[in-house]
Image 1 (cartoon, rainbow, N blue to C red):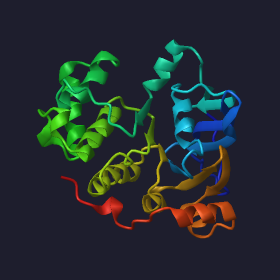
Image 2 (image 1 turned 45 degrees about the horizontal axis):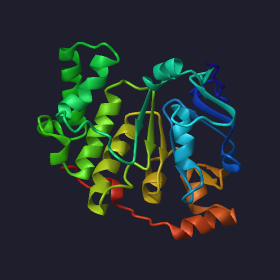
Image 3 (image 1 turned 90 degrees about the horizontal axis):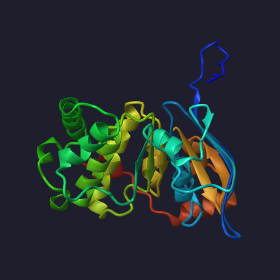
Image 4 (image 1 turned 90 degrees about the vertical axis):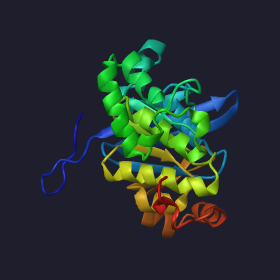
Length: 266
């Protein structure tokens, strides 16, 4: 991939994900109307906006769960394919964490984490198990490795889902409102894990309604409204100093919580 140069000669990080005029419609109802922006390697981009603005649809277009109507999406320099077989290869390099945890209820916590690397990547069970334990420790749940998902809290289940996605060694992580299905007291533990990933340099595209988290963690915030990008830039510019009246109206209607990513993990 080509990399631009800074004035001092240093190379900028390459674009790992590019949306180029992406359009998505259901019949005659437009959902995405020419969305264009990019995510650089190592960057954390938070996508925010009113309900129904197309945020989740945009993420689902990246891994082929939704087929966009027009435009292009490029991942690591190549245009996303349309065949299921090719998409399956792309999905191995893109981790996605959904609103609901989608864990296998009949498997243990550790079993959920190691299943993908063994069955899809062909890792040995011993290697996958060792890495699975490392990832569970990373999300604070190594002690729960033998539990079934039904015995965990919502926040714990979501942290297992994050570990499971990371076990596939993705180049990009997508988060689709990862805390929206959680009780308020569980939100902080999941956001804490996501902040740790950001600090570790993981490339992430995050759809979120947690404005305080976006302000603290994002390198850039993109605001979607009615399927269009109406603002994009550093969090301080977009979330605090936007001159766009539609952005200001949206921000007046959302909840800000300055402590949500600092809650302890249990």
